Amino acid sequence: MSDSGDLAFELPSVKAAEKQRAAEVLAALEKAYPDAHCELTHANPYELLVATILSAQSTDAGVNKVTPELFKRFPSPAAYVASTPEVIETYINRIGLFRNKARAIHAAMRDIVEKFGGQVPRTMEELLTLRGVARKTANVVLGNAYRINVGFVVDTHIERVSKRFGLVDHGASVAMTERRLMALFPRNHWCDASHVLIFHGRYSCKARGVNCNMNSICDAYGTACECRPGKVANKRVARKPVAKVTTKPIARAAKGKNLDGACRNERPTEPAIAARPPMTA
Image (cartoon, rainbow, N blue to C red; front, side):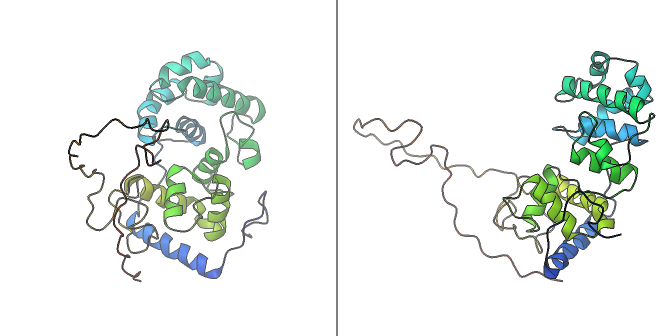
C-alpha cells in the first residue's frame, strides 16, 4: 500500500535527510516511552469515540474520572439514543463544555444507530459526518480502535513537540502539521508515533519544557523552552527590588505603553545562551 494513494489529499514531498531525522527522533522517543498508548480508558470503539469527544479542551485524566459511570449508565449507542442530552449532561458536568459535548454525543450515537447499524464507522469520510467529530477524533478512533492509519493525530502536545524537534515549521497550521508528519513517518507507524509524541509532550516537553529528556536531539533545547543550562524548570526567577526614585512630574505616556514605547509587561532581555552540544548517535 502506498503512503498516499488512497488518501484524500497529496502528501508534501520531504527529503531523505528529513525522513532520517524523523526516524532518529522516533527511535529515541520509542526508547524513552516503550509503553506509550492511548490513555483514554475504553473497552470498545464507541466508548473510545465518546471519550475522545469529551477530551476536546480537556485532559485525558479528567475524562477518565467521568467515563466509568457514564459507560455503566449507557452500555451501547442505543442507550444514549433512548436518553436525552440533559440526562447525559449529569454524568459529564465536571468536563469543560459539557452541554455542547452532551448534545454532540447524543447526535453522534443517533446517527450511528440509524445510519451505521449501531457500529462506529471504519472510514474517515463516515466518521466526519458525525456531530462532534473532526479529523483528530476520527484519527484517534480509526488508529486505536481499528488500527487503520489514514491520518496522523495532531493535538496540542504533538503540535508543540513536532515544532520544537524541528520536524514541522513553527508557522504550520494543524492541517499542514498533520500532512507533514504523515510524509515524514512510515504509514504503519502513524498511530504509534502519535502516542510517543503525546507522551513526550504530556510528561516531559511541556509548554514550559519541564523534565526534558531529549536535549541531545531537540532543535529547541536552550531556545524555546525552560530547559536551559543553569535554569530551574517551572520556576520563575525572582525580580530584584527596584529602588524608588523621586522625579518631577512628566507628561502622560501613550495609552498602553511606557514612555519608551515598550510594553509594560515586556520581560528583560536574557543573556545569550550557549549552543547545545552536538548531537550524539
